[in-house]
Image 1 (cartoon, rainbow, N blue to C red):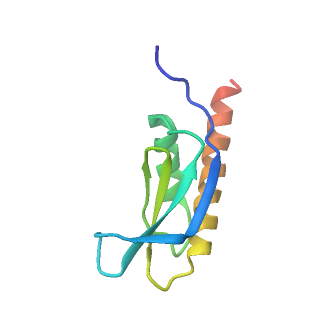
Image 2 (cartoon, one colour):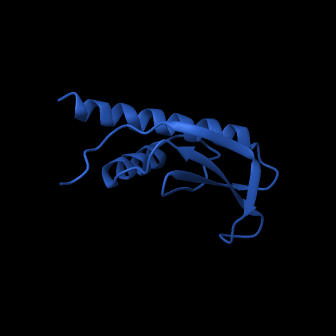
Length: 102
């Protein structure tokens, strides 16, 4: 039986722990821990929300397991990137809620 699509919560935003990323020079990531591993529909909606966002400083955000890995350039304001990612989770969840409520 397939898993039903559901909303995903944020458990922890840890901007204090950063890792070097190999995407390009000066690329780093921090992680946002999610309440569960999102299914493919949630991931699809999340990527659509990211792609359609007008946020000027947006960087790649990867959904890996039950984490969001937020890419940034060393020296950027990571808290702003975290707020952006949180907003994407909220808008994605609203889309999922619309499906569930049908």
